[in-house]
Picture 1 (cartoon, rainbow, N blue to C red):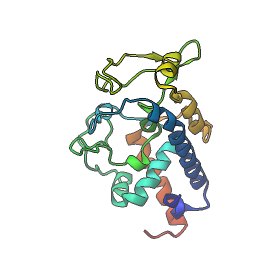
Picture 2: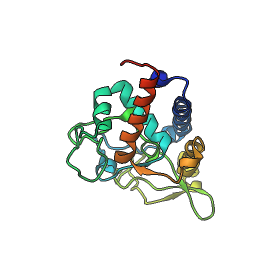
Picture 3: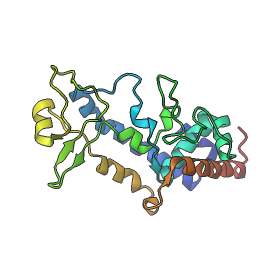
Length: 213
């Protein structure tokens, strides 16, 4: 990926490129479910991000760091230097990269973290090991498939009968990403802590390689 060219030939480049492949696989695995079910996030919602901040593994932080250094370098450098960056520098809870005043809300969408790619379009497994799906609580109460009210949970059998498909599970897709750097699985950090460190690591690699932005 072009976002890793400034630190080509390093282990971190290999890790970030591998995660990019995993992210592409996640998107592909969600296609059938997105096409089959009628539920969509309301336009301009962003409610799930207001008071939520991801805990991330090393690979996620490095991926977002590489993306920001390529697409938003001044902002990334400010973060690495410990300076607050807009839009949320007030210390409020929630993702500090969330813009409440923008209709798009996420200011780093192309580099967003794993859970941000999974939420809403993945299921989980019950105690019986079978797939189930719990709709986001912010979805409209009336579905677009004829007006039936949205329920809190659907079993795999119900999903197949109603939509002809089941969503991929969050645990399975998360395992694919964690497998790229298994030693970091137990070393999760809040995004606001992990991201500046990751940006600093990549900037150091760039300096060693003689890269000039």
